[in-house]
Image (cartoon, rainbow, N blue to C red; front, side, top):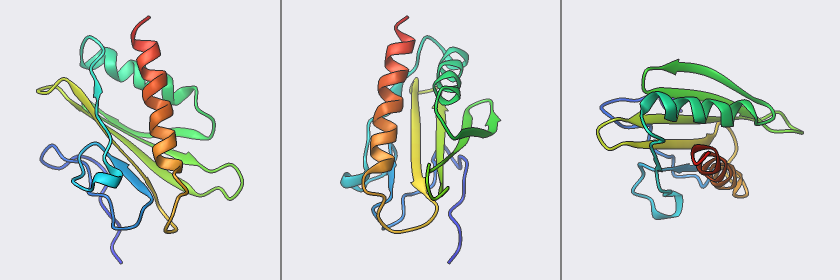
Length: 129
C-alpha cells in the first residue's frame, strides 16, 4: 500500500482514506468533512496563531513549514502512534484548510475530529485577542 502524500498539490491536501481515521476541510466524504478556519487578519498572522496553538499542544512537533503550509506530528500518549496534522493557508479564499489523519489503524475513535475541534476553538479564542 502506498503512503498518501503530505503537503499541498494544486491547492489540495491529500484525500482522506476510506478508513474512518481522518478529517479534512477539503474532502467530499461528509462523515469526514469539517469547515476551514477563517484567516486572522492576514497570512502571516494566521500562521503565527496556528503555530502558537500547536506549540501549546502536548506531544506535538512542527515538522515542515513553508509560506502557505504547516505539517505537524502528534504522538498519542500511551502507544506513541503518530498522526499527521496539516494546514494549508489559502490566501485567495482567506481560509485555513486542514487535514488530520492517523498513520496506522482503522478507527481512531473520533480522535482526529476531537483534536481539530479543539484546535479550531483555541485558534478562534486566540485570534480574537
